[in-house]
Image 1 (cartoon, protein in one colour):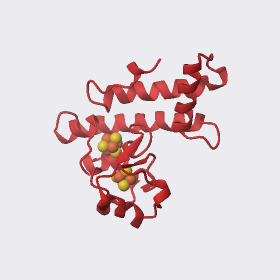
Image 2 (tube, helix red, strand yellow; image 1 turned 60 degrees about the vertical axis):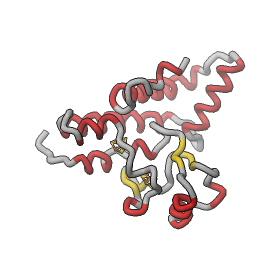
Image 3 (cartoon, rainbow, N blue to C red; image 1 turned 120 degrees about the horizontal axis):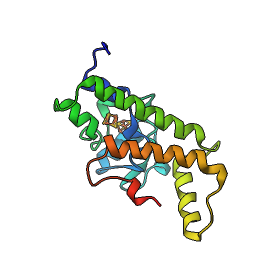
Image 4 (spheres, rainbow, N blue to C red; image 1 turned 45 degrees about the vertical axis):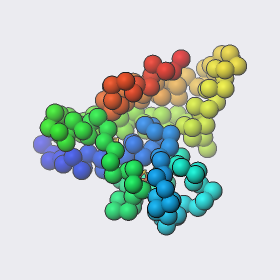
Length: 170
Ligand code: SF4
Ligand code: SF4
C-alpha cells in the first residue's frame, strides 16, 4: 500500500471508540463536560449524571464532529492499534488495514440489526433470553455471529490484554 497515513488519519478512518462497538458509554467528568454536550445539541434527557450512552451523536461519519471541543475523557483514549502505531511498534499501513477490517465487521453487525434496534437493545435481549434459559432464535444467528466476529477481532487488536470481551460471553 503506497498511501501515506498519519496516526491522526487512523482515527478518522475508524471512529469505533465513539460507537457501541468498544464502549457502552462515555464518562462525563463533571459540569464542564455536561456543558460541552449540551452546547453541541444534546439535551438533559440524553445525559446520565456521569455518562452518556454510545454511539455518540457527535460522531460525524468516522470522525468527531466537535474535535476541538470534546469532553475531557475523549482526547486521552488510545486503543491498542493507535498506541502501537503511535509508538512505532506497528507500521501505519498495517494499523490502517486493521482499522478497515474492524470497520467492515462493525458494518456487518449494523447491517444485521433488526430495523429500529440498537446493539444495546440486542445485547439486553440476549441477556434476558440467556437468563430465562430460552433457546437462541435461529433468526438471530447472523447478527450473533457478526457480533462475535467483531468482538474476537476487537479483542485481538483493539482491547488491552485482560480486557477481552469474548471470554465473558456464553
Ligand atoms: S478505536 Fe482506536 S483507531 Fe479507532 S478511533 Fe478509537 S482510538 Fe482511533
Ligand atoms: S465527543 Fe467526539 S470524540 Fe467524544 S465520544 Fe463523541 S464523537 Fe467521540
